Image (cartoon, rainbow, N blue to C red; front, side):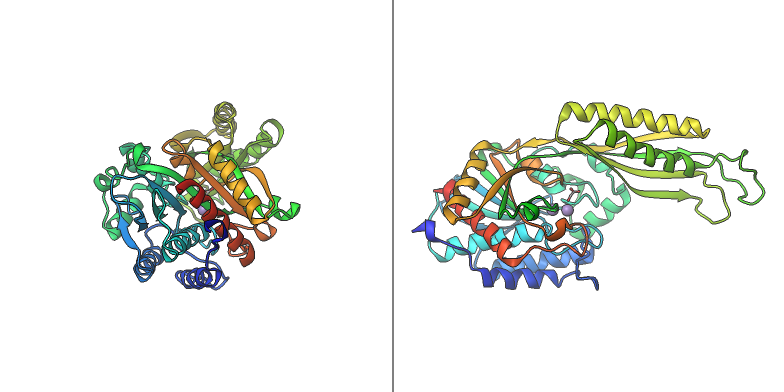
Length: 411
Ligand code: GLV
Ligand code: MN
Ligand code: MN
């Protein structure tokens, strides 16, 4: 009976642990930014693991890596399951990796039990989910969201993108050729860690995602004038760092007071010329903000840009604004959410509906096919950090919900 089918938890753990060694850091996390040596090594390992599992390997123009289990001859739809093997700099072992390994484990379980679904199954590792270069790159390419201008001015810098694509044997042209027709996909399922504390606090096994927040990014440049840091009076300085820091504090206040459903982050500041004894002539600020609601997003966007202007003017600075891309908020499929809930109940697992404050490839896929995500509890909510941890039992619960939902969708 397929309802009694479970993943092989030991085999899944062995794969998870092998993967965690690739790009492992002394702090217990992994460092696998997109197209770094460690990332490419993880993808090589994934390919070998696919072949060891007797599954078919496939890669596309966007560098996405997949395991394929053909249940039916060609011309049939594919049910996609997956996540990503890239990480943020000095990230954790679970973000993305759990989704890819559990997807692979679902395929292995279906294969060894000789189940012939009405769809083919594909376990996919999407390129650059984390946004080291572009963000949701592989899934955007599949969903026809990727546009040439996104490759020309990526948030990670064009030079880094070109060098990375070269290392991976990819190009702008190949990236833009990876789109898949809507009719080819039966759905997209992903298991991910929650990256927050809601499940742990409530003592609930599984989170069923109702919507994923949107993300907008900008580079804001506050431009002043380089001067001698010892001989220039405080009054005479055009100090770019003042605009940048004052903006950061004011943006926090703005979001706290007026946009309670949103978050804002200044994740990086680059000072030029950048020396102890020179007044900063220019500070480039990496700005990102998120909202689950498109209308609120527009209002926050206007308010933040206005604020940046006000702060620049206050310190006599010039402001340069560079838009680096946006991912819209996405609603998950009702049908898939219901199937996840049914699977949880059949497995005796508690579940709750929640929104995702993190970006995920499901955002790209939601326009293309019925898409749904589940979360496993994160210990202390830690993520994008080596402290990231999910109990193995919770990972296995998530993988079993993924398996049972894939069976429901694919039967
Ligand atoms: C990806 O994990 C993101 O939310 O930035
Ligand atoms: Mn992730
Ligand atoms: Mn992440």
